[in-house]
Image (cartoon, rainbow, N blue to C red; front, side, top):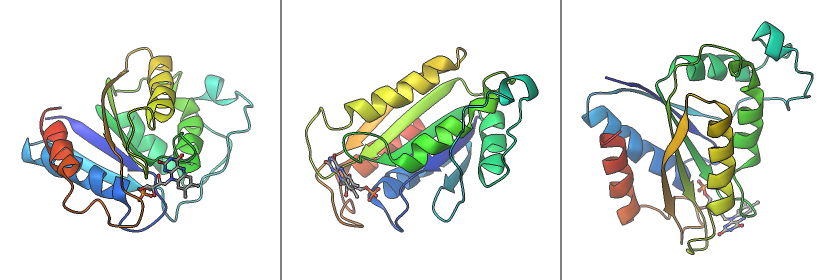
Length: 178
Ligand SMILES: Cc1cc2nc3c(=O)[nH]c(=O)nc-3n(C[C@H](O)[C@H](O)[C@H](O)COP(=O)(O)O)c2cc1C
């Protein structure tokens, strides 16, 4: 049994990427894993100021909702990041959280596998590439971890438009096979 933490970074309710995350979670639960989804909606997460104090103390001097999320990231075996594509990149909310995870870098983090899920209006292969590459860059910095899977659902713009999309089943299978 793996401890799976899914971070959903769309700030709108019933978001397409959130539904992709929920299907991934259902699959992982069906396989017997311990799964938690954390949404960045309604969270206060300040920008990393780059002071590097955390590299000595393993803590951030700033205290906000990033503290609890970082603690969950520290203890998870598998991290899953779900993001809407914003200007061919990951959401600002997710990037802000990844930066604020910097205290994990010198810590004894458990995660080894990272997955990335994304949704966008356009349905072309290149659309999520920069976002996936950014998440891969983050995972590569944590030497014991790597980006092991990505899933993209294009062609969805409005809230809930992903409903009934075959990619939801793919997300379920991906979660089941972690
Ligand atoms: C600020 C902003 C930028 C966006 N940029 C892109 C883009 O570059 N390419 C694209 O295909 N869709 C883009 N979209 C559309 C969203 O990716 C799309 O609506 C997606 O389904 C949102 O996912 P969510 O429902 O999980 O929030 C953008 C939307 C917003 C609000």
